[in-house]
Length: 279
Ligand code: ZN
Image (cartoon, rainbow, N blue to C red; front, side):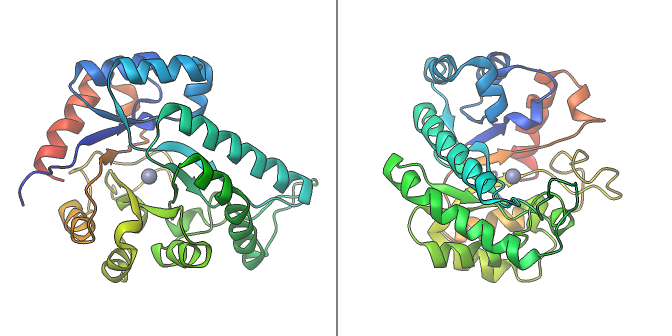
């Protein structure tokens, strides 16, 4: 398969330990990277206006803004606070010029005594309600929301929208302004993925790559560099291209014991080489 023509974007999570926001932007720019996907905490530490200025000065595309959602909570007051925070995130994304906000659903809520709910259906409903509550704000700000289904291993404690089919059902129910992010790490195992990516069509707002290592030693922080694991990444690129996707290919590698310990320039260099050769 020919190398990708979509620009490579570097997700800031890939270099979370190496750089603050300024360092991240400068490292990407000097490596010839033309797109990034910032994390909200790093932007906050830098200052929103300063972050926007750095992005503009380095002429960078912003393929996504990480990460919102996380709607389920035990009380109505908590859920309202989460909705308000997501609206603030939308305003920040507009200032930064983000092409979308990446949202994850959130998980089974924990009550004030520390007990986690077993009401998965209820959590699903809270996610739908939360999305419905922020969508008008997102539409008005012209910031599309990208629902990212996460691997089902996270359903208990992180995010309980776990298939592209479920994410697309939410898009169907809620309408314009809501799309999906397809991350190969989360969907590679899904036997229905071909039909679901076709169904997604123009609603694909992001395409994230890394690799699935066997064995995976940590559920969150042991993602592999593209080419080092078992995911057939070109297969997924072919599917999203067939669905009409032309935007960035975003490298998103949380790797506490490996890539986070290497020099940032080496990580970026490796991402570029793998993007050209195995994506
Ligand atoms: Zn992702």
